[in-house]
Amino acid sequence: MMKFTKQNFIFLVGGIIIYVVDIGVDFWVASKYFCQGQYCWGILLLCFRGLSSLITQVFSYEWFKNDWEGTDTGKLKWIFLVHLFQCGIFIRYWFALKYGCQAAFKQKSSRDASETDPPNFIQKQAVDVVTDINMLRVFKTFLETTPQLFVQIYILMEHEKNNFCQYAAIILSFCGISFSMVDYQISLRKSLPDKDEFRVLPKLVYLLYKLLTITSWILSISLITLLSVRSSVILLIFLWICGFTWTLKQHTTFCKSRKMEYLYRTVVGIILIFTFFNIKGEKTKVCISIYYAAHTVVTLGILFVYMFWKPSIIKEIHFAIASILTILSLVLGIIFLVVYYRHFHPTAYCRPPACSDEVDGEAGQKDRVKIGRFQNFIMQ
Image (cartoon, helix red, strand yellow):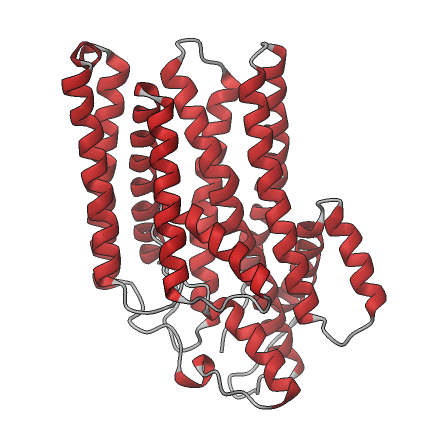
């Protein structure tokens, strides 16, 4: 049976602290840009923050509606108002702390207890609430944190004057990405009871695989942006179109409503710009190979364009450091990817009963929504 441990509770508290600090740093960095007269950068960072918050609030409220279907409408109105003021994530954190504290410190369940027993029910509640939070954090990571990281690195490469708040924003962005990746995989393993526990070594390998491949790609995009902002925008739009088209062809069933499903596919298209994302929970050996092969070709292509188009810039120390970091992180990231998939990745994602669409009765439909939300959201 899946368990919510004291270590999970500590990670939960750490995630809350980082989330609150991240909000403060975003406004701090933006205010610094406004004070320096760099209004474009300040507005851009706030736009990433606003877009991310809006989309995560929409998904959060939709999930509350699905989970509380048939309950008191007064509660949903109150929940709607909280989400309208962009504070819905704090309600989820409150529920997570409530159930997490009970599961980690106050409940003692036996191995033979059924899922309907009070201790095991609290465990399941804690895991489900934290799972939803981690799903929303994945959205936030690629809608806000990763684009902000790209902008901050671009500013550092473009301008020689750097300050402490820029470095703080970059460090916190990397921390946000790292926590989001690891916490997501922990929730994924806990949601699949037939899978092994996500231990320390697999966590580290997975973290390095994601962090290094994303770092290489962000540096590559930063380099092409230095060369031509227009070319960078065209590349990003083209990659999003490719990712969105792929999600359409996959016929995803993540959301109950068609409008929310298209919003989900739009978000997945953005995520696919930065990292591979398996939205169907199927075997992905071919897809992931094509994905990172394409990233490798584009990365090398960008460096070759610099060599033949602007050979004078090769002598600059910033370009040399960025190029070395880009290639090194790409190679190491792919090595960790191979190690993770060969030795630590689950070979199957869910048992047939959990994946079946044939669920009878109202209670069965509610269970299908609760299970399906995460089973249809599989990220490699």
